[in-house]
Amino acid sequence: MFEPFHPQEHLQITAAGLSVTLDPLSLLYRIDTPGYTWRQSPVHAPQILLKDGASLPFSQAKNIRHCRYDSGVGTGILSSYDGFCLPDGSLSFETLVWIEYATGFVHFELIPTADNADFACVRWPAPFLFETARQEDVTVMPVMQGLLIPN
Image 1 (cartoon, one colour):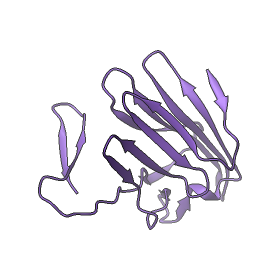
Image 2 (cartoon, helix red, strand yellow):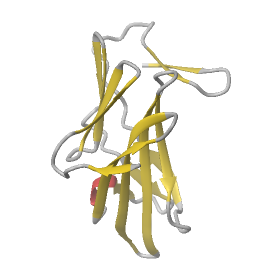
Image 3 (tube, helix red, strand yellow):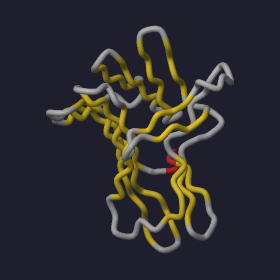
């Protein structure tokens, strides 16, 4: 089920004891849990790097739409970006940020929606800010056996 959001209001989903909020102007996320909040760095705007070296910020899309996404396994925010003007055609994609009901994991997915999605690198999601530089501060990615990235 898709439920559109008003384009100027912050978009929020809540599940498994945490909430994820998208600022539609900066396109950055905040994750709130009991006792802690993670914010993305405003210095690192989401962008795609093309194979020719050009940078394409998400905010340059002519059409940006956000809607609530609900499935049997989680709830999320689905964002569509299209109308990028490129010399060799157009580029469009979607992002889906969702909370898994059973585990509370927050998933960030980028979904190309055009066959000509020919990019070199995606810089999304933006890095999260951390107030301290402690050795035990890590990002856990649930990939294969698990991946720990020092913050």
